[in-house]
Length: 407
Image (cartoon, rainbow, N blue to C red):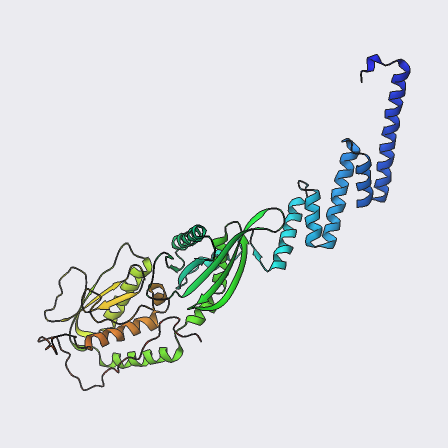
């Protein structure tokens, strides 16, 4: 409308109409303010959609009253409805969080927005000595491979477990099997990554987890760490086996040093796990302190032994499976104790048991006669153990590795 084309009377009438309309808006706003309810302000905004100062004031007050109402109801529908009505309002972030918290609780999901106070104390305090393998339950093969590979790399990088590569076959079961199902979850408006995880110990289902976060891996590991004592208990060496090993070792201590010469050649792979390296060094020091034989020579692979005619043993750690290997020759065909159920990290966590058990197995291997297809083989001079007038160390019972018995 062009005001210059209006007559004086028309201009006066227009100004009067605007004035009266303004009075009406102000009067209606004052009426809504007097009632001060969600319904009153909602009606005002419906009747006066013009974006003026009264509209802004009414909208602001409506948001405040709506949030107060949602807080009184304190339910998922109340908060979700508020967020839908005021997606960019000043109370929207808090309402969004509260709606997500309520919904997550209803679904039995642990929702993590930030690190718990004890996160670093729990997760980084020590490594768990469990061989763990993560298997995806996704029906899509490519997605399954991607998830499993991502989890494997996460575990390798964190150095908190002994991770097993899902692309490889192992001659033993993992201590922990983590079967995961990952998906995108909308608790209210924003997407979260959700993981449903089932944990099995030696094939027996023990616990299920439901976790949602932006970086899901670290928080699921936190949940497992919080239950670490439960898993340790399930895989603990049975007390009768521990007592048997202790008694046998004390009998061995009473008769050492044994007669004869022993030459132990070891290999430490510098590219291997720090657990592997520390375990080998610790066990070798334990053997030296035990004083196993009258002439014990321990040396790295490639260096000649100091004794001639000594019984020779070879010790190393499998770089993939992380368990120690002890042979009479540098091959898998020669006799050896079965230590495949163990791993370096587990041994380090319970050195008092495992170092004694490994020492007893080493003695058993030395006393075991060589096998040959050509019949009994005479031992070379200086390779026999001298008989003593003390009881021989009893033959060891079948040892139980971690997890071989669930208490």
